Length: 352
Image (tube, rainbow, N blue to C red; front, side):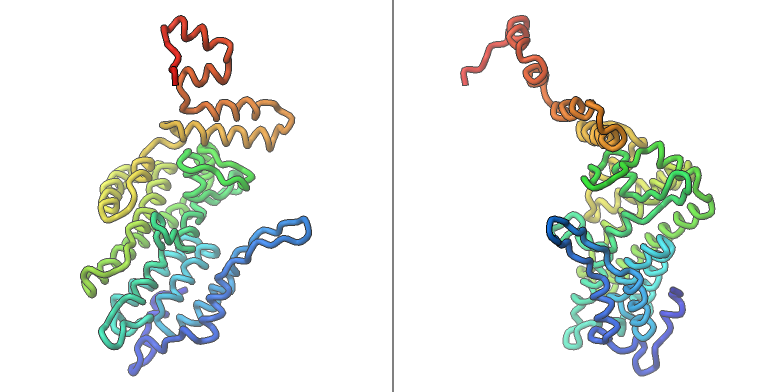
Protein backbone atom coordinates (compact mmCIF):
# COMPACT_ATOMS: atom_id res chain seq x y z
CA UNK A 1 0.00 0.00 0.00
CA UNK A 2 1.03 3.62 -0.52
CA UNK A 3 -0.37 5.77 2.30
CA UNK A 4 0.19 8.98 0.33
CA UNK A 5 -1.94 7.73 -2.56
CA UNK A 6 -4.73 6.39 -0.36
CA UNK A 7 -4.81 9.66 1.61
CA UNK A 8 -5.56 11.75 -1.45
CA UNK A 9 -8.91 13.53 -1.40
CA UNK A 10 -11.74 11.53 -2.96
CA UNK A 11 -13.42 14.68 -4.29
CA UNK A 12 -14.32 18.25 -3.40
CA UNK A 13 -17.89 17.42 -2.40
CA UNK A 14 -16.91 14.39 -0.33
CA UNK A 15 -13.18 14.48 0.55
CA UNK A 16 -13.30 11.08 2.27
CA UNK A 17 -15.69 9.39 -0.14
CA UNK A 18 -18.87 7.58 0.79
CA UNK A 19 -19.42 5.40 3.83
CA UNK A 20 -18.95 1.91 2.36
CA UNK A 21 -19.99 -0.02 5.47
CA UNK A 22 -22.75 -1.79 3.53
CA UNK A 23 -20.83 -2.08 0.28
CA UNK A 24 -20.16 -5.65 -0.96
CA UNK A 25 -16.39 -5.12 -0.72
CA UNK A 26 -16.68 -4.12 2.95
CA UNK A 27 -18.91 -7.08 3.76
CA UNK A 28 -16.60 -9.50 1.93
CA UNK A 29 -13.63 -8.06 3.85
CA UNK A 30 -15.36 -8.70 7.18
CA UNK A 31 -16.32 -12.25 6.18
CA UNK A 32 -12.80 -13.08 5.00
CA UNK A 33 -11.41 -11.87 8.33
CA UNK A 34 -13.41 -14.46 10.28
CA UNK A 35 -11.40 -17.56 11.29
CA UNK A 36 -12.83 -20.98 10.52
CA UNK A 37 -14.26 -22.93 13.44
CA UNK A 38 -12.92 -26.21 14.76
CA UNK A 39 -14.98 -29.14 13.50
CA UNK A 40 -15.30 -32.85 14.19
CA UNK A 41 -15.71 -35.38 11.39
CA UNK A 42 -16.22 -38.86 12.75
CA UNK A 43 -13.41 -39.46 15.22
CA UNK A 44 -11.20 -36.78 13.69
CA UNK A 45 -10.97 -33.22 14.98
CA UNK A 46 -10.19 -30.67 12.29
CA UNK A 47 -8.41 -27.61 13.65
CA UNK A 48 -9.78 -24.12 13.12
CA UNK A 49 -8.41 -22.31 10.07
CA UNK A 50 -6.91 -18.83 9.90
CA UNK A 51 -8.73 -15.96 8.21
CA UNK A 52 -8.17 -15.55 4.47
CA UNK A 53 -5.65 -12.75 4.89
CA UNK A 54 -5.01 -12.41 1.17
CA UNK A 55 -8.71 -11.78 0.56
CA UNK A 56 -8.89 -9.42 3.54
CA UNK A 57 -6.01 -7.39 2.09
CA UNK A 58 -7.59 -7.28 -1.37
CA UNK A 59 -11.02 -6.17 -0.16
CA UNK A 60 -9.64 -3.68 2.37
CA UNK A 61 -7.63 -1.98 -0.37
CA UNK A 62 -10.75 -1.86 -2.56
CA UNK A 63 -12.52 0.01 0.22
CA UNK A 64 -9.62 2.37 0.92
CA UNK A 65 -9.23 3.27 -2.74
CA UNK A 66 -12.74 4.76 -2.61
CA UNK A 67 -13.03 5.92 0.99
CA UNK A 68 -10.99 7.08 3.98
CA UNK A 69 -12.09 4.35 6.38
CA UNK A 70 -10.42 3.60 9.71
CA UNK A 71 -12.22 0.27 10.07
CA UNK A 72 -10.90 -1.04 6.77
CA UNK A 73 -7.43 0.25 7.68
CA UNK A 74 -7.39 -1.86 10.85
CA UNK A 75 -8.39 -4.96 8.85
CA UNK A 76 -5.64 -4.13 6.35
CA UNK A 77 -3.07 -3.77 9.14
CA UNK A 78 -3.84 -7.27 10.38
CA UNK A 79 -3.62 -8.72 6.87
CA UNK A 80 -0.36 -6.94 6.01
CA UNK A 81 1.32 -8.31 9.13
CA UNK A 82 0.87 -11.73 7.52
CA UNK A 83 2.14 -10.71 4.07
CA UNK A 84 4.50 -7.73 4.36
CA UNK A 85 5.26 -7.89 8.07
CA UNK A 86 6.17 -4.91 10.23
CA UNK A 87 6.81 -2.40 7.40
CA UNK A 88 3.29 -2.99 6.09
CA UNK A 89 1.86 -2.44 9.54
CA UNK A 90 3.84 0.80 9.90
CA UNK A 91 2.33 2.03 6.61
CA UNK A 92 -1.15 1.40 7.99
CA UNK A 93 -0.41 3.46 11.11
CA UNK A 94 0.80 6.26 8.82
CA UNK A 95 -2.50 6.05 6.93
CA UNK A 96 -4.65 6.09 10.08
CA UNK A 97 -2.69 9.05 11.43
CA UNK A 98 -3.17 10.89 8.13
CA UNK A 99 -6.91 10.24 8.09
CA UNK A 100 -7.33 11.71 11.56
CA UNK A 101 -4.97 14.66 11.11
CA UNK A 102 -6.05 15.67 7.59
CA UNK A 103 -9.67 14.45 7.34
CA UNK A 104 -11.00 14.58 10.90
CA UNK A 105 -14.35 16.02 9.82
CA UNK A 106 -15.03 13.52 7.05
CA UNK A 107 -13.19 10.21 7.55
CA UNK A 108 -15.21 7.10 8.35
CA UNK A 109 -16.79 6.16 10.63
CA UNK A 110 -18.02 9.74 10.76
CA UNK A 111 -18.85 11.69 13.87
CA UNK A 112 -22.52 11.64 14.86
CA UNK A 113 -24.28 14.13 12.59
CA UNK A 114 -26.46 15.44 15.44
CA UNK A 115 -24.03 15.99 18.30
CA UNK A 116 -20.60 15.09 16.91
CA UNK A 117 -20.31 12.06 19.18
CA UNK A 118 -17.01 10.24 18.37
CA UNK A 119 -17.90 6.83 19.86
CA UNK A 120 -17.96 4.90 16.58
CA UNK A 121 -14.62 6.38 15.55
CA UNK A 122 -13.08 5.69 18.95
CA UNK A 123 -14.21 2.06 18.75
CA UNK A 124 -12.74 1.69 15.26
CA UNK A 125 -9.32 2.94 16.38
CA UNK A 126 -9.48 0.92 19.62
CA UNK A 127 -9.51 -2.19 17.42
CA UNK A 128 -5.84 -1.54 16.76
CA UNK A 129 -5.19 -3.25 20.09
CA UNK A 130 -8.50 -4.06 21.77
CA UNK A 131 -8.20 -4.46 25.54
CA UNK A 132 -5.33 -6.93 26.11
CA UNK A 133 -5.63 -6.62 29.88
CA UNK A 134 -9.41 -6.21 29.98
CA UNK A 135 -12.52 -8.31 29.55
CA UNK A 136 -12.72 -7.73 25.80
CA UNK A 137 -9.23 -9.14 25.25
CA UNK A 138 -6.65 -8.34 22.60
CA UNK A 139 -7.76 -7.53 19.05
CA UNK A 140 -6.76 -9.73 16.08
CA UNK A 141 -4.31 -7.04 14.92
CA UNK A 142 -2.63 -6.90 18.34
CA UNK A 143 -2.27 -10.70 18.43
CA UNK A 144 -0.84 -10.72 14.91
CA UNK A 145 1.68 -8.04 15.88
CA UNK A 146 2.89 -10.22 18.76
CA UNK A 147 3.43 -13.04 16.24
CA UNK A 148 5.07 -10.96 13.50
CA UNK A 149 8.54 -12.32 12.63
CA UNK A 150 11.48 -10.24 13.81
CA UNK A 151 14.18 -12.58 12.44
CA UNK A 152 14.60 -14.10 8.98
CA UNK A 153 17.21 -16.85 9.17
CA UNK A 154 17.37 -19.88 6.89
CA UNK A 155 19.46 -21.76 9.38
CA UNK A 156 17.67 -20.90 12.63
CA UNK A 157 14.21 -19.73 11.65
CA UNK A 158 11.77 -16.87 12.16
CA UNK A 159 10.97 -15.71 15.67
CA UNK A 160 8.44 -13.22 17.01
CA UNK A 161 8.05 -11.36 20.30
CA UNK A 162 5.71 -14.14 21.42
CA UNK A 163 8.42 -16.73 20.73
CA UNK A 164 10.95 -14.66 22.66
CA UNK A 165 8.65 -14.37 25.67
CA UNK A 166 8.18 -18.15 25.67
CA UNK A 167 11.95 -18.71 25.44
CA UNK A 168 12.59 -16.23 28.26
CA UNK A 169 10.01 -17.91 30.49
CA UNK A 170 7.62 -14.96 30.51
CA UNK A 171 4.77 -17.11 29.21
CA UNK A 172 4.06 -20.82 29.03
CA UNK A 173 4.33 -22.49 25.64
CA UNK A 174 0.98 -23.60 24.17
CA UNK A 175 0.30 -27.32 24.39
CA UNK A 176 0.24 -27.65 20.60
CA UNK A 177 3.59 -25.88 20.06
CA UNK A 178 5.84 -28.48 18.41
CA UNK A 179 9.19 -26.73 18.78
CA UNK A 180 9.74 -24.76 21.98
CA UNK A 181 12.12 -21.86 21.23
CA UNK A 182 15.17 -21.14 23.36
CA UNK A 183 17.13 -17.92 23.72
CA UNK A 184 20.33 -19.34 22.23
CA UNK A 185 18.58 -20.26 18.98
CA UNK A 186 16.77 -16.94 18.86
CA UNK A 187 20.04 -15.07 19.39
CA UNK A 188 21.64 -17.07 16.58
CA UNK A 189 18.66 -16.29 14.33
CA UNK A 190 19.12 -12.56 14.89
CA UNK A 191 22.84 -12.80 14.13
CA UNK A 192 22.15 -14.86 10.99
CA UNK A 193 19.48 -12.48 9.68
CA UNK A 194 20.33 -9.77 7.17
CA UNK A 195 21.36 -6.61 9.03
CA UNK A 196 19.47 -4.32 6.65
CA UNK A 197 16.30 -6.36 7.07
CA UNK A 198 16.52 -6.20 10.87
CA UNK A 199 17.18 -2.46 10.66
CA UNK A 200 14.14 -2.06 8.40
CA UNK A 201 11.92 -3.88 10.89
CA UNK A 202 13.24 -1.85 13.81
CA UNK A 203 12.63 1.37 11.86
CA UNK A 204 9.08 0.20 11.09
CA UNK A 205 8.41 -0.35 14.79
CA UNK A 206 9.78 3.09 15.65
CA UNK A 207 7.64 4.70 12.95
CA UNK A 208 4.55 2.84 14.13
CA UNK A 209 5.08 3.97 17.72
CA UNK A 210 5.40 7.62 16.67
CA UNK A 211 2.23 7.32 14.61
CA UNK A 212 0.24 5.67 17.39
CA UNK A 213 1.27 8.43 19.80
CA UNK A 214 0.19 11.00 17.20
CA UNK A 215 -3.16 9.22 16.76
CA UNK A 216 -3.79 9.48 20.50
CA UNK A 217 -2.79 13.15 20.39
CA UNK A 218 -5.44 13.89 17.73
CA UNK A 219 -8.18 12.57 20.01
CA UNK A 220 -6.72 14.49 22.95
CA UNK A 221 -7.02 17.67 20.91
CA UNK A 222 -10.34 17.00 19.17
CA UNK A 223 -12.28 15.15 21.89
CA UNK A 224 -10.64 15.95 25.25
CA UNK A 225 -11.44 13.29 27.82
CA UNK A 226 -12.64 10.88 25.14
CA UNK A 227 -10.52 8.67 22.95
CA UNK A 228 -9.12 5.19 22.45
CA UNK A 229 -6.67 3.81 25.02
CA UNK A 230 -3.69 2.79 22.91
CA UNK A 231 -1.20 2.52 25.78
CA UNK A 232 -1.08 -1.28 25.45
CA UNK A 233 -0.16 -0.97 21.77
CA UNK A 234 2.54 1.60 22.50
CA UNK A 235 3.96 -0.67 25.17
CA UNK A 236 3.95 -3.66 22.83
CA UNK A 237 5.83 -1.70 20.16
CA UNK A 238 8.39 -0.61 22.77
CA UNK A 239 8.86 -4.21 23.89
CA UNK A 240 9.47 -5.35 20.32
CA UNK A 241 12.02 -2.60 19.72
CA UNK A 242 13.75 -3.38 23.01
CA UNK A 243 14.08 -7.07 22.14
CA UNK A 244 15.50 -6.31 18.70
CA UNK A 245 18.11 -4.02 20.23
CA UNK A 246 18.86 -6.51 23.00
CA UNK A 247 19.48 -9.44 20.67
CA UNK A 248 21.43 -7.42 18.11
CA UNK A 249 23.39 -5.34 20.62
CA UNK A 250 22.24 -2.13 18.95
CA UNK A 251 21.46 1.21 20.58
CA UNK A 252 22.09 0.88 24.32
CA UNK A 253 21.23 4.58 24.77
CA UNK A 254 18.03 4.12 22.79
CA UNK A 255 17.12 1.09 24.90
CA UNK A 256 17.50 3.16 28.06
CA UNK A 257 15.31 5.86 26.53
CA UNK A 258 12.73 3.21 25.67
CA UNK A 259 12.70 2.14 29.31
CA UNK A 260 11.78 5.66 30.42
CA UNK A 261 9.09 5.95 27.76
CA UNK A 262 7.72 2.54 28.68
CA UNK A 263 7.29 3.76 32.25
CA UNK A 264 5.17 6.57 30.82
CA UNK A 265 3.04 4.03 28.99
CA UNK A 266 2.55 2.12 32.25
CA UNK A 267 1.37 5.31 33.94
CA UNK A 268 -1.06 5.79 31.05
CA UNK A 269 -2.68 2.46 31.79
CA UNK A 270 -0.42 -0.34 30.54
CA UNK A 271 0.44 -3.22 32.86
CA UNK A 272 3.73 -3.01 34.77
CA UNK A 273 4.91 -6.64 35.15
CA UNK A 274 5.87 -7.11 31.51
CA UNK A 275 7.86 -3.87 31.56
CA UNK A 276 9.96 -5.10 34.44
CA UNK A 277 10.42 -8.50 32.83
CA UNK A 278 11.50 -6.94 29.55
CA UNK A 279 14.68 -5.64 31.17
CA UNK A 280 15.84 -9.08 32.30
CA UNK A 281 18.77 -10.79 30.59
CA UNK A 282 17.61 -13.12 27.84
CA UNK A 283 16.87 -16.55 29.29
CA UNK A 284 17.31 -15.49 32.91
CA UNK A 285 15.52 -17.50 35.61
CA UNK A 286 14.22 -15.12 38.25
CA UNK A 287 11.11 -16.78 39.68
CA UNK A 288 9.45 -20.15 40.33
CA UNK A 289 7.37 -19.52 37.21
CA UNK A 290 10.58 -19.27 35.17
CA UNK A 291 11.72 -22.61 36.62
CA UNK A 292 8.41 -24.27 35.71
CA UNK A 293 8.50 -22.89 32.17
CA UNK A 294 12.08 -24.09 31.70
CA UNK A 295 11.15 -27.57 32.93
CA UNK A 296 8.21 -27.55 30.49
CA UNK A 297 10.62 -26.93 27.61
CA UNK A 298 12.97 -29.71 28.75
CA UNK A 299 10.08 -32.14 29.14
CA UNK A 300 8.77 -31.21 25.71
CA UNK A 301 12.20 -31.86 24.18
CA UNK A 302 12.51 -35.36 25.64
CA UNK A 303 8.97 -36.32 24.66
CA UNK A 304 9.60 -35.14 21.13
CA UNK A 305 13.21 -36.25 20.58
CA UNK A 306 13.59 -39.17 23.01
CA UNK A 307 10.10 -40.57 23.67
CA UNK A 308 11.48 -43.69 25.40
CA UNK A 309 13.39 -41.69 28.01
CA UNK A 310 12.08 -41.89 31.61
CA UNK A 311 13.34 -38.39 32.37
CA UNK A 312 10.01 -36.63 31.67
CA UNK A 313 8.46 -38.61 34.54
CA UNK A 314 11.12 -37.39 36.96
CA UNK A 315 10.98 -33.85 35.61
CA UNK A 316 7.21 -33.73 35.98
CA UNK A 317 7.73 -34.61 39.63
CA UNK A 318 10.32 -31.86 39.98
CA UNK A 319 7.93 -29.39 38.38
CA UNK A 320 5.19 -30.37 40.82
CA UNK A 321 7.50 -29.52 43.72
CA UNK A 322 8.58 -26.10 42.43
CA UNK A 323 7.72 -23.63 45.17
CA UNK A 324 7.06 -26.35 47.77
CA UNK A 325 8.56 -26.08 51.24
CA UNK A 326 11.14 -28.52 52.64
CA UNK A 327 8.71 -30.77 54.51
CA UNK A 328 6.39 -31.04 51.52
CA UNK A 329 9.31 -32.16 49.36
CA UNK A 330 10.39 -34.70 51.99
CA UNK A 331 6.86 -36.10 52.23
CA UNK A 332 6.75 -36.49 48.46
CA UNK A 333 10.21 -37.95 47.90
CA UNK A 334 11.04 -39.77 51.17
CA UNK A 335 7.92 -40.06 53.32
CA UNK A 336 9.64 -42.62 55.57
CA UNK A 337 12.20 -40.00 56.58
CA UNK A 338 9.73 -37.32 57.66
CA UNK A 339 9.56 -38.63 61.24
CA UNK A 340 13.35 -38.33 61.54
CA UNK A 341 13.20 -34.76 60.24
CA UNK A 342 10.59 -33.91 62.87
CA UNK A 343 12.71 -35.53 65.59
CA UNK A 344 15.96 -33.83 64.61
CA UNK A 345 14.33 -30.46 64.07
CA UNK A 346 12.16 -30.60 67.18
CA UNK A 347 9.07 -30.10 65.03
CA UNK A 348 5.75 -31.05 66.56
CA UNK A 349 2.89 -32.34 64.43
CA UNK A 350 -0.16 -30.11 64.24
CA UNK A 351 -3.12 -31.51 66.14
CA UNK A 352 -5.35 -30.15 63.38
